[in-house]
Image (cartoon, rainbow over all chains, first blue to last red; front, side):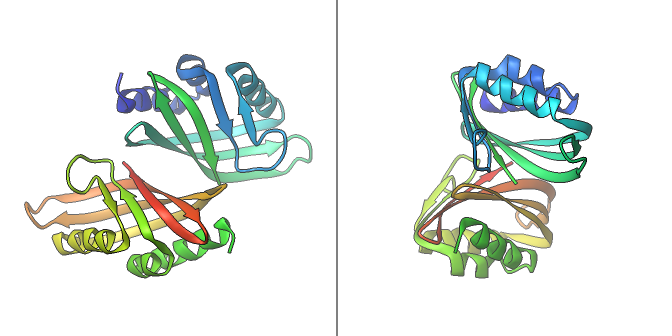
Length: 117
Length: 117
């Protein structure tokens, strides 16, 4: 699959709300996930750890909607845009934000995801 | 200036339609500009060459609107989203497209711009 084909398939799953399926199918075993944040979650390495980060996020937010737009492709990378509307369970704050995910593909798998906001 | 400060200032100029001023002010002398395309324009290096590419683009399109959204920041990079509405002079085709620009900052200057679509 070309980067554009992977990008289209990955985006389609995200648009259907199946973000975890997208990861399951296209993450490399040594996926690296990089957030624009300090702390433990800033850089997470390996499929198990990234899955755990994702599970933590879903467990700690009420998801009202996540709308995915894209993909946008260049070389071995693609980007998606997410419009996120969630409530943080810890303090009840509702967060509406736009973010961009940048994905790097190698050998048909996503080896890095990097989130911008 | 932090990456976020540069990103905000760069985005503000783009939102005002002053893309060339943004480049003038924040491009490094050895800026590299990477398009998601084949050919001569795929990778252009150096301020003079990138300015010439930009001038070519403006000369060959009628610009109806370019709307900028962002910035989105992570580490030493930031992203902008552009909704472009132009007519290509060569064949009169009207092109409405969304693209993402990814900018890498070093020493207070943009050393790379990379466009996704």
